[in-house]
Length: 188
Image (tube, rainbow, N blue to C red; front, side, top):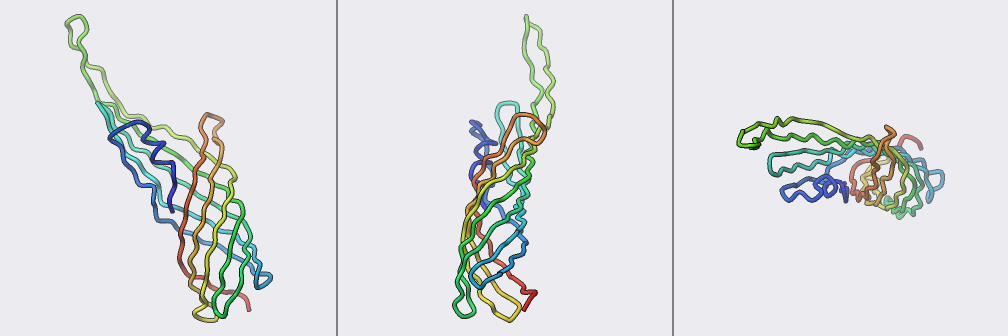
């Protein structure tokens, strides 16, 4: 899973800053194929935290985005033997916490010929967001046993939401995801 803007926004204009926006993710869900070519699906996606670390003259910081995404949507597909190819689309609801911890080092200044130390410190601040966005994608599955399939899918989602704490700050992120895994059939 790749989140497009989080690292760039965390780093801002700090030259010595880097992060990881391509992160592994976990997903689980359920789909109900009410026709062989149409289904409804709900999933939960949980990427590992997106992080960024930076530093400058007398300061350093680390930021992280912790997101949880619930999706609901539909699938349209066509079977070919043991395989099925499909497209999908729908909505997602995210809840996320973006946290930054910044440390400012002590430093000295000279005022009227007298050296004075200004104490630094560490502060942590963050924002919680939640809201609805859209998504689309496609994939395929192959049934290797009557109740077991292997699948792969790719998609694009927009995570968009407002601050949940009635403060400033929103989330407007684009996500590209690529998932592979196994599916289990519970009926028929």
